[in-house]
Amino acid sequence: MHNTQSSWNNYINSCIESYLRFEVSIKSRFSGDINNYSDSYIYNFICTENISGIESGCSNTTLKTRHNDNDFNIIKKYKNFHINKKYRHLWVQCENCFGLNYKKFLRSKMNICEQCGYHLQINSSDRIELLIDFGTWHPMDEDMISMDPIHFGEPYRKRIDSYQRKTGLTEAVQTGIGQLNGIPVAIGVMDFQFMGGSMGSVVGEKITRLIEYATDKSLPAVIVCASGGARMQEGSLSLMQMAKISSALHNYQSNKKLFYVSILTSPTTGGVTASFGMLGDIIIAEPNTYIAFAGKRVIEQTLNKAVPDGSQSSEYLFQKGLFDQIVPRNLLKGVLAELFQLHGFFPLNKNKKMKS
Image 1 (cartoon, rainbow, N blue to C red):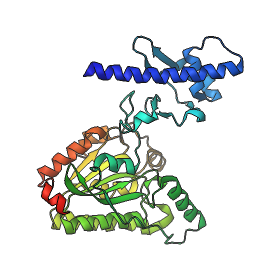
Image 2 (image 1 turned 90 degrees about the vertical axis):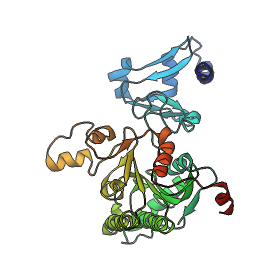
Image 3 (image 1 turned 90 degrees about the horizontal axis):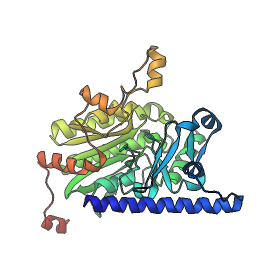
Image 4 (image 1 turned 180 degrees about the horizontal axis):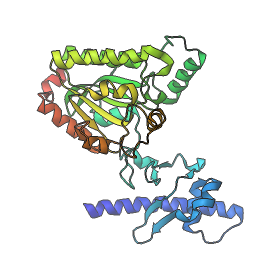
């Protein structure tokens, strides 16, 4: 099986390389340059480097094509480049190793970099598809939108409209009911692509309603956190959501003795970290997640002290006991199913599924 999978990957990579060489040859003909194209020429064709990057570090950048197994790898040692606009629909650049991932394959790999295993950001809809069984997702409160409660002004309303068009969402969190390996669960998934996942009145209300519904129906609850914190355009009303959600969770956990799992994804900061992000009965983080209350720059400017590199990463914080587990994205669904069953939540049998 390993050899078959390896052969398939080599075949796919070979096809991608052939496509790129074909594109390069077309460009060469029109430009009058029909010399043999080198690996660096293909790299420059895909990527655009800024002038300072070319002057300072061009020698540190190589693209290697290993002709033995046709493995197409890009090795990056500096950050001063970006993918040519013409090829952004084909490639996604890793934030960690700066390698290129073929976009059509990246989603099937759960947005995990094929080069280094780094967990790239994933939107809320893909996250729901990853965790919830097909055909069992039932969203809640989709029609709730922010109405600019403190009259911040036209810029805020325009920004909300812009993100709604860009993401297809009404707010920075999706909430609903679904089944995870057959187990009914109430789940909320924050989306960092919508105003940085900031928590305003609507986000707080949707999460509170989700927890109250889970309390009434005795369902396990999961909240996937990805947020820059409270939304400044809603002032103190956004800060009040911390207390409101925490109060609902207190009733859910302490009074009803139900089970809540908090999943921290990158980044989880500010008011989300200071409230429901850290209130889970079990707290799980993805690898290489940025978790903090205040950002590194804010801390350094306020305290006039240097913050050590990596001190706000999930690996470092796990060693300090801040949460329970670091779970890779591809294993998360199975781990959650085991935790639910350990706490007395089991898959529906076929008769119950048919009745529902």
